Amino acid sequence: MPVTIDYYMTLTSPWTYLGSAPFAGIAERNGATVNIKPCKFGPIFEQTGGLPLPKRSPQRRAYRMMELKRWREVLGIPINLEPKHFPCDDAAATRLVIAAKLQGKNAHRLSLELSRAVWEREETLADPIAISSAAQRAGLDAAELRAGGPSDAELDKLHEKFTQEALSVGVFGAPSYVLPSGEIFWGQDRLELLERALKKLA
Image 1 (tube, rainbow, N blue to C red):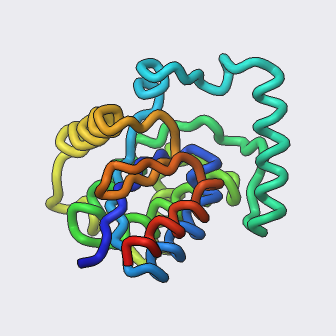
Image 2: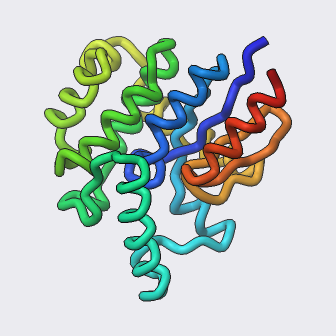
Image 3: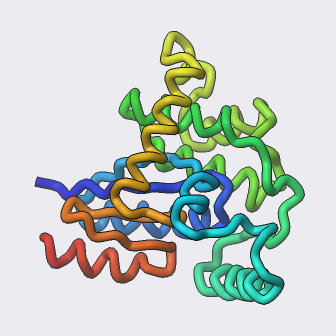
């Protein structure tokens, strides 16, 4: 039986973006299934002691920037350290990811392209054209994904459900990867440890 990894993420996290492609590679190499679950990390931070970026100390913000530079170099993944459209309204893009998930499409690949729009292409996820273009890069059609599918309200309820589920299993930051045992790996810098755990399960 293939292992299913619950993937708690948000489209506007640079760490989710940096880890997305490497995580997809790890899942493929180890025959694991990715169960993507977009979450609202504002409420998660509030309940777990985290702080949104503007409220963090200058020291923490400076270190975050240093780490982004380091990982950009290590991974060789293009990323704008201060993109024009961060933060941005990602509600429509998140709905599309959930719709793709419900239809059995590659929602993980879609999420990567949507994140790339913000962190590499200097686009906003509030722009329907940017969302549509990201879907095309992922081999999907945004209009088809939404046609006849769940309503915005239904997709938003699932978004909230994933958020509450993340809290219930102990998630406090993005990205988080959770194995069926309940073991959590927080952050794209823990992907090597995640792969080691997957190999033990093989």
